[in-house]
Amino acid sequence: MTPTVVRPDDDGEPAPEADGPGQVGGTPASTHGAVAGARRKRRARSRNRAILEWVVAIGLAIAAAFLIKTYVVQAFVIPSGSMEHTLEINDRVLVSKFAYRISDIKRGDVIVFKNPKPLPGEPAQLIKRVAATEGDVIEAVDGRVQVNGQFVDEPYLAPDTVTRDLPRQTVPAGEVFVLGDNRSNSKDSRFIGPIEADTVVGKAFFRIWPLSRLGGL
Image 1: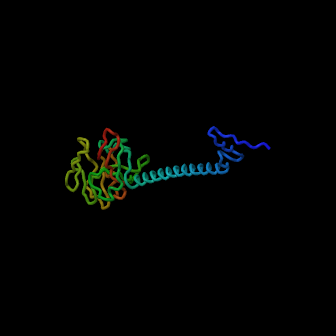
Image 2: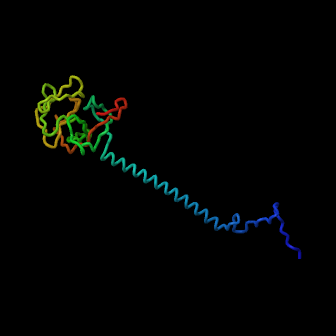
Image 3: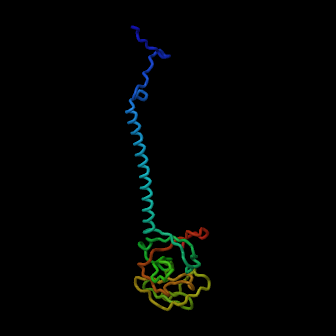
């Protein structure tokens, strides 16, 4: 018999066995496939976790925005010229919805309230300035507003503004009397009567647009 001869590699060691059937790099193919499958599952889980985190983050952001808009602060667009020149058409203001949860409505406040007598095409909410609160006696004397017998200083009015259609009256309990700064073009309490305090949406406190007139009210 001729003896079997093992040929050495260059370093004098026997050459490794070649991959046999069903082997990859000396590792059984079934083991290699299991490792690859596990890696794919880990990547899929990581991808699904990232997607879930994004969905949760977006959901929380939407919920936070809804809660803020509903209970804290909301932006409003001025639809008419009834508050000129304090507020112009298309100005945007921020309205605090919690202001009157912690304080009372005061004279001089600019408020947003539900339109008590909306006509077709009119907005559901109006913005005016509080001229008098419950128990106050309000009237116009010589074209100027008087509250409880005292003329009201109104620096926000345009020069030579005259207030008409305001006979002497007492503001009922639970209501406020509102006037537009543009007295000649305002649907306010002179025509719709005092408004119920619980219809007040909030207090307008800051103009955010246009940028050239950015500032508090």
